[in-house]
Length: 140
Image (cartoon, rainbow, N blue to C red; front, side, top):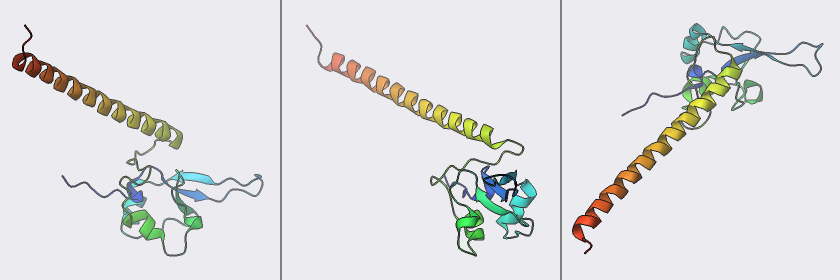
């Protein structure tokens, strides 16, 4: 089965940041959600909506402020992030702290499910081997 390419434009952690105010020491950036319409535009190379802000990954995988010029489109819409970062599908309106927690919970649940599945398989194999041993080498 072919899986769809996972790009930052589809990721929940794709955000835009505005520089902080001069009154805050140190200045803290304001992080804003990027809506569906803006994400569609980003996939097609249209970044006219960005304005004075910069784009980044809120999980700190990349930040436009630390990239060489002209890498925006490559980072946002061309690089396949499958298995290479914290990609989590965009969920409109969900705040970042909740997304961090829910993604961790989801990952933990998948790992537990995988572990339970392997335990079940090994129990079945052990049961079958026990039956084979009992029928092939009966004890007197």
